Length: 256
Figure 1: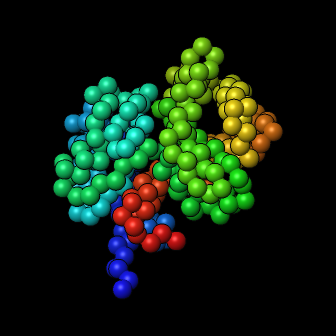
Figure 2: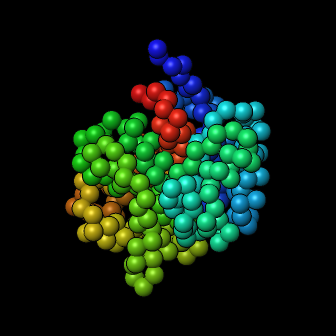
């Protein structure tokens, strides 16, 4: 007997500056509500982030399953690292924390991983490439590796050692703003960072995601690499969509 399919999931994308959420039809990948954004509470402690997530749940009058994209490395449900996380997150069993606090099933994965997963699932062009690197350039640098259309979770390319520091402190959008870089200056920086990634992983395509992908026309002329560099088709909605779609796979929903 075919089991009934629950199609609607609240997808929540937790970022360093904002928490975004929408109800998603996981059978089609369409958002059923307008994506809502609120500021991430600071300091970004478990208690404060929970308040933000609860506010998102309340705004949507939601009592069903939730998928969350979280800005940290999660291994077997436990937060292990995160360049922009409060230390109090390390060691937290994050799914258990949110599920018990919200009293609904909550499924959590790295924010860049779920955004990359959404791109792989909803952008048919990705199937034409063997190895794709997806990068989110925001407060930090998140990454996802898509190999033959499948997500390989747990990459942390923003933590690569680069120019005496880590890569995200050279090419993140936060660094661009704080250093008051022009688009040409930023584009040249980004080109160096992407060339470094290309040397290590040799992808067939690099996709730029996050809010800055909407402004890629201002710096893409500087991204001269031996591999195509393109903006994310889903732009900064990928995290919200991906969080819901990831949850769908975890609870064995039908995802087309």
